[in-house]
Length: 569
View 1 (tube, rainbow, N blue to C red):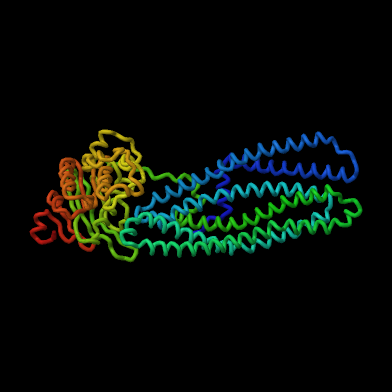
View 2 (view 1 turned 120 degrees about the vertical axis):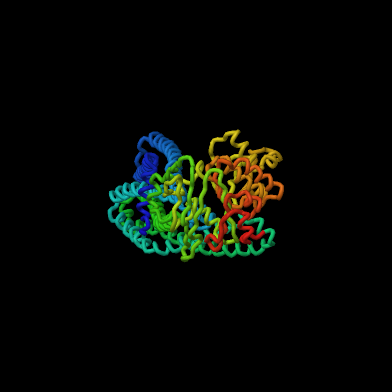
């Protein structure tokens, strides 16, 4: 796939900025043109003094300088106000579009990289892109300043002006050959930074495992190694950028020396006055800044190219320029009231050619409970994820009331279907927000969900009740409390079908007993597909399916399978 060109991306960001971008550019251009006036006034004053002439209305000049100063203050304020308006608009749109793109992918394949690395790309790569546009505005304004300055200088001394411009152009052209090296160094630093950020995120997510294993020193050692690699990559990039910046910014010294050499005879003849020298030096300072900005811009184009490639990678090869299109989440496709749900010949094949599950058939209906059991790695969780569309199925059909489900990831969602995983994920928010997930809070539904999950006793012990913050990934809750919070989330949605993956694995015996007792009371109108090894649940099931190596090894009632020796406890 062809990568979006940096200049194309810059143009898209300009358009996204809209009128804020136009206002920002106009303000900066006017500001730089206003900066010309002090130089012209100083030239006139110095030339008059050297000629022994009376200053031309000195109070008027002072008033002009004061007016220029006030104008600059206003323009600087306007620039400071419009800069974030231009930048943040592009950042917000790109981040939202990229997140929407990730949401559109199958759940298990949505993230191409560690969460920490993905966060790094969202924060750093997208965060730096709009700065290129703002820098381009500075360059456009400096070019306008340079054009007027060169015109004035040419009127003063054509030969000196041409002699100054020639080496400056050569420096800019020569820096163009540094493009590839900038690109390589940028890639190395970005990869190193991504590894560091990813390792930090993974370490924080497994902090308890690290401490229990006594592996703190080993983790810190590996962290030091990653930081050392990042330090070397950063040093290479910064040194190379600094070398280019120094070459550009010191061009003014070369220009001043050339100017002094070229105008020596004119100065001796009185044709090149002190004011003219002052104006040349004044203008060369701004022109030097232009060259410096050009050098940085050349480097940033290559850096932008790296960022574009990184964003297109985590965006599943979506061209970066499409980040400015409306990337809305596909609308949920509602389903009618369930009469019967059938799964036929369902199969999931991995990239290496092996099957996760194969030839799976099952039937669900309101009030019907189907339990899936089997050894570790038999394909139980894979089956639930395949039914939900979290995994791409290669064979089989899912049928709802006689109609095939064509988009399970858009159709088998609440309020039709709800899913609770074996290892639930909670947001770093309150219990109530984790249960409702942004939906409107209905007190009666909340109470029912909490009661059904046997969670009311725990919540009563919390100082802030359902408003208690759970911490990062629910770190302030026990494993059983996390599972019951996830179970309450499923009940709150009042779905027609429950898909439950060993939700009671972290519960104590008494709490688990209450959970399943309440489960019996509320499941009469709900179709249930549960992965579990618990005899208490299997004994309630209309059908128990035993998976082995991704295929159905046996099926029947709990009593039948127990009599045949197909279940082990």
